[in-house]
Length: 128
Image (cartoon, rainbow, N blue to C red):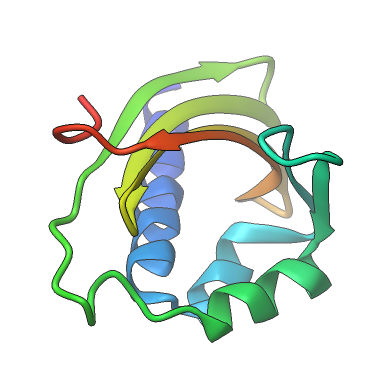
C-alpha cells in the first residue's frame, strides 16, 4: 500500500501545482475526463463537467503570477480497495480557503480524480 500512497501523493501534488499555476494541461492529466466538480456553496448547487471546468481555470489569473503564498495540505488519504481512494486536502487562493474531498479511481495503473466536491470560506491565516 506504500507505493499506492506515494502515487496518490504525487497526483495530489500535481493537482495543487495545476491550480496554483492554472495549468490546464496538468489539470487534465490528474482529472478523469468524466470527473465531476461540485460545491453546495452556491445556490443552486454548482456542478461542472471537465469540459466546463477546464476553461474556467484557463481564464483565471494564476495565484503564482500574483505572487500568492502557496498553502496546500494533504490531511488524509484512505483506500477502499486497489482501485478506489479518497483524499481530504486543503488549499488557499484568491483570498479563499478550500477543503476538497477528492475521490480517485485507478484505471490502467493510473490514479485520477473522479470527483472533486469542495467547501470554500473566507481565508484566515493559512489553511492549517
